[in-house]
Length: 130
Length: 312
Image (cartoon, each protein chain N blue to C red):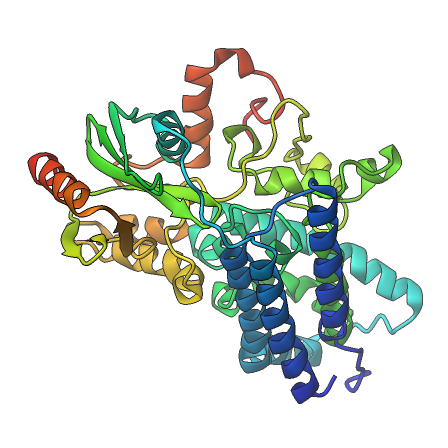
């Protein structure tokens, strides 16, 4: 197959499928139904380190997790989720919440959309436990 | 010798089929409300990884092909191009695929290339296209050397490899439950390959087959899909990014970080490259064996069931 035809097919195919998925409403990120769901999402990543406490943010997009080995966070990865400990994290306030920078190539930045008072509370909580 | 033998690039020719099949699977899922899941960013990442794999092949393919042609120059054997030679080549190349794939899960250097194929938490036809950009650097082309030295022309071997890849496309789906019993017994199927993509302790390091599942049965790595335990797709520690660059290179970065940390012996540095994923010099991480062992400690009733049988 000529290279330019292949290029058109590949680029057109990728773009077309992505647009179609978005139009079908399949871009919605996961929301945690409750704290139990957040704990369960944490357990999927760290089955041997139980979440002692889970604080779900108001928009249910992420949860702050406290464990015996320190704090962590669960957050959506598309329709699914992942979790990380916050060891070595640099946390800064943003206009709409918090930005967590991790020394982790597989999860370098976590953007959390939080209410101002909620962001302050999370930041205080993390400063006390991290 | 038939130096000028050429075969069509079947993978490139299959691109329109890949796109059409993805659209059909997507519409099936949307209309029927079952048979799998799609999510925009996940699918987009998978498709970009697939495109990157094609580009990588165009840019770096000459290395493997040059190596194969060198072997072809030195071998005194030439099995010709009869249809039964192509068929034999296809079967033997599938055996080659089994071992390369097994190495890909058991040697971290090779896993660094293959890991991205397992990095989606979804399992649909786009996942099939989430392919490596760095396969050349694993040097697994060496595993094909015996085929060429035996007299299979490099172009034929690559043709068979392409057919193998195309076969494996359709098995990346949840839309198909189980195939007729005789097919499940001999061929790799969606059910068998869902097990391979499962991160459940039971399903780790199982079902490496490309086309013929018989290799797993012969070499003791076959685990059936259990109705009572649905595969949970993805990595043991799932990625926190959709960035294709990070997806493609994250394990290489991990190897570099681990092997260059201060205070290690040279043997430990080497082991970070060649031991199974999860190996660490201080035992602070878990290999798949450790994950299975810990699972059995928490769930002793699973001992002796598929995936938790004899050590392999």
